[in-house]
Image 1 (spheres, protein in one colour):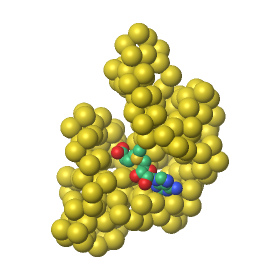
Image 2: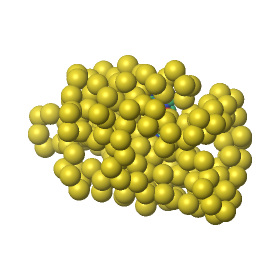
Image 3: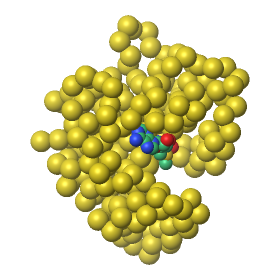
Amino acid sequence: MKPRGPIGSCYLPGRLYDLAFAGMFRGLRGRVAAAVDRDGLYPWLDVCCGTGSQLRGRVPDLVPDPVVCGLDKSCGMIRYAAARAPGLPFVCGDAGRLPFKDDSFRAVSVSFGLHDKSPDLRRAMMAEVNRVLAPDGRLIAVDFENPWSFKSTVGALAVRAVERLVGGEHYWNCRDFLKRGGLRAFLRESGFVETARHEIETVSISIVVAFTR
Ligand SMILES: C[S@@+](CC[C@H](N)C(=O)[O-])C[C@H]1O[C@@H](n2cnc3c(N)ncnc32)[C@H](O)[C@@H]1O
């Protein structure tokens, strides 16, 4: 999608999201990018990319095939993402029906893009991730876990309060996600095997690198 200059970059939900979370997520974005860079896992697709901040700062494509790509269902967010990262490709599309060929990517990341979805959409997303990942590809997932310590319990309470404020389906899907065991259980049930995990205790989140059998 072509950057829309000032219109795209003025998209209010995008601006507010970045204002609230860009600083907080800086370290986490760095870890996800490092997991991709460490094994040169390109091409890289960021699913449910939102404002595109995960890919921002990546070198724009110098080769005909895209090296990185962001996808989100919200075309407003996609316009915003494209305006904030000129030269990088962003696609408006459904994570449950990815508009890419089989085995197209060596990395697919999804950050905070699972807990808010319905169980059916989550399952469809994982089937699609599986399909577009190359045989040696890796999924890098960031999402909520059930708390495992006092510190993570306090963090989880704060997160839960924010999710309650968002409300609606988002909140109920998040509750369901945690009731089923959070990211760890979801990946295992989806047939993914973890190769690395980093836990952020203060917010009860984990960053996981995984492959499918
Ligand atoms: C909580 S945000 C996470 C954004 C980003 N990954 C991050 O880490 O900041 C979830 C995103 O999922 C997107 N989304 C919701 N349903 C979707 C779908 N079916 N396909 C693709 N994206 C979807 C929303 O538009 C939103 O940008």
